Structures are given as C-alpha cells and as structure tokens.
Image 1 (tube, rainbow, N blue to C red):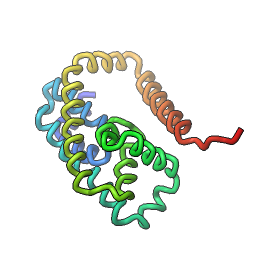
Image 2: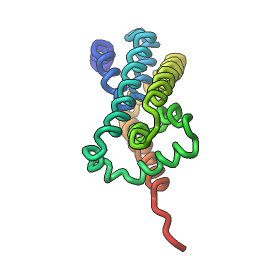
Image 3: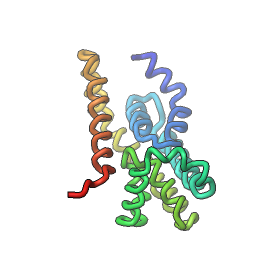
Image 4: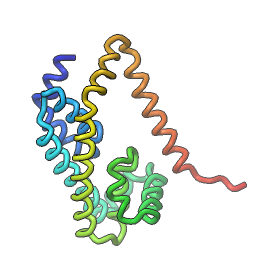
Length: 189
C-alpha cells in the first residue's frame, strides 16, 4: 500500500490531469485525501483538475460539433443515454452544464449532446470553465476536509481485503442498474 501511495504522490499530478480530462471525480477526491496526508498540494491538485476537466469537456463538445459522422458509430450503443442528456438539457437548461460534472454515467455524453445542437460554443465554454472551477474546488476541499474520515474508513479495508472490491462492484452495479432503468424504453400497456 505504501508503494501505491508513493507512486501516486510522484506521478499524481499527471494521473490527475489525464483522468480529469474524461471526468476525474475519483481522481480529485483521491488528490484531496493525498493532500490531507501531505503527499500532494491541494491548490495544485485543484488547479490541475480544473484545467484538465475544462479542456476535456470542451474537446468533447467540439468533437461532436464538427465530427458528428465520425462520432456517431461510437454513440450507437448509448443512444438512450444521449437522449437522456438531451432531455436533461431541455429540462434544466444551462444548469445541466454544471450538474453534469457530478453525474456519473452521462458526464461525457452531455457535452457531446450539447455539441450536436445549435448551442452557442462561446456560451458553453464560459459555463464549462466556471463549472469546472466550481467542481474542482468543491470536490477538492470536501475530500481534503474529509481526509481523516476517508483514511480511517479505508484503513478498515486492511482488516477485510475482500470488502473493497465488493463495495466497488456493488456501486458500479447500482449505477448500471439506474442508467438501465432511466434509459429503458417504455413498453405500451
């Protein structure tokens, strides 16, 4: 475990940047906890996650705006999630650009869905930068301030090593089940 922590503190900012390009919620939380432990700097972690997340969502937006025909084959399996992202955009408007940062499973699809519409690029980028900043600050400081509780919680896993994979797979299963139900076609009655 000590080797993992040392390698994370050595390569942590690079890992944080790359992971935050495509989402990064777990990475910024881990960086906050490592900052609490003194292995990383919190301000640098927040800055790296903010920049990478803003760049990542902007790239997704522009890829879908200017390369629809190239991207559509990859989105065929996610038609329902893409439709859900369009419905969320209609329902919540501009606020969804902020909230999508915290919604696992549609986080990458919402910028792509918005990019396929006539939504103004400048407006998206301004809102994206603001929301990426708020996302990084909120998660960074929450994980830093919860560092003691998180490290204590994960310290219990050393006594029960089978518990961590069970919890992770259970959470992933619940997320998968939620999105399966949320994007399921309604059958006629």
